[in-house]
Length: 72
Image (tube, rainbow, N blue to C red; front, top):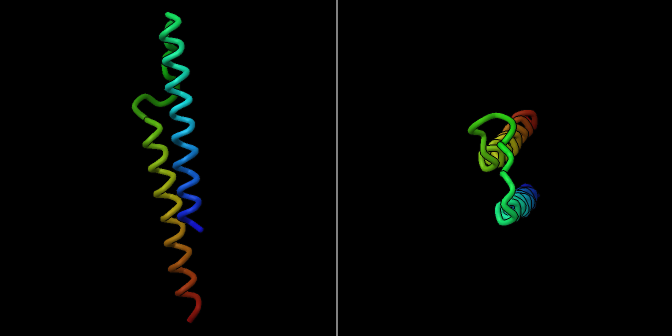
């Protein structure tokens, strides 16, 4: 189940990333100024995706260990 959730997360990320890059490229073709990126400087989308994966798999490991520990 977790691998399907991870696959869905990766697919959603790539769809969002492609749409984001496509919109920026269209603005560049029209000669518009590209808007400055808001938010935390240096925090890239791939960093957010990797953080979500760490939290997701870390939560799964904690749940698995606690489930095995409480079974005894």
